[in-house]
Image (cartoon, rainbow, N blue to C red):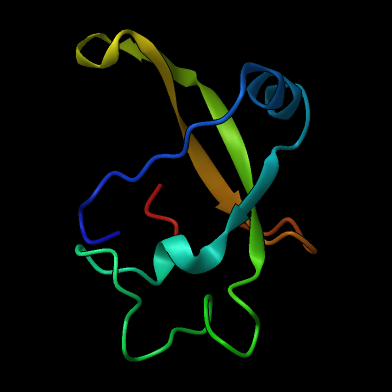
Length: 95
């Protein structure tokens, strides 16, 4: 979103649990922030006050796993986003 890679640190237990299942909840506001981490003035259908910036399903793509050497080799993976209820892909997901 806005050509900015955004991340979230999760515990090892949460990561392993999510990797072995469909994924984990992730707040949809990630699609509603600008590059300065301010919520867009014009609300989006996917993330807004009415739906409370509902959770999405974040599914870990293990094929993207790597370590980031300049961040003390912290593990890194990309995720794909899905509707939590229907499991349909989220249209705003750039992947």
